[in-house]
Length: 187
Image (cartoon, rainbow, N blue to C red; front, side, top):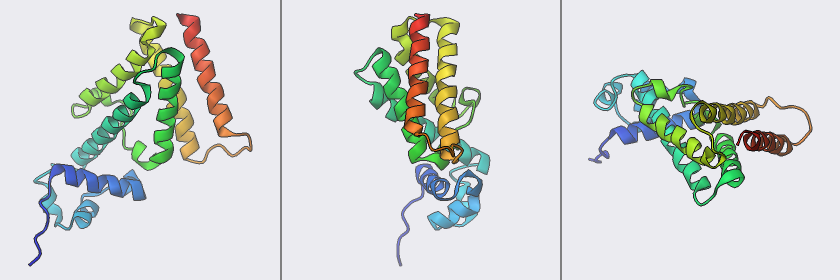
């Protein structure tokens, strides 16, 4: 008799992420995760209370993954170099994981499960912007502008929304330069 590996919440989230990567967030169901992990659907309730909670854990994992990757991209850098590295790492993540990226909630700061991860992500961006001398509302507005640029561009790109022949890398580099010019003009 084969012994099935012990199921954990982390393994349930791993299976959910595999499904999301293959088929998108809309394909994430408890039945699909149960089938992937080789258990009956009720067995999942030992690890997650509902599909909503599972989606929360998936979003949390993606936020943590993004924050770790972006931290690696900016460590040892400052100013324009750090911001450029952050913006390119962010876009690259969405290019590599377009379906997974959609699992991140639009407002993780107001989700109990994801609040801490959202704050860490925001602190990373604020720390990256610190060399520009931005404080308070100015820093928050600069953070929002960065997110709008990267999220907007990468989301449109990953959904195939740019159909014209001009190079997307050129357009993105222009957006990054525009943002950096704006930051320098504020400091």
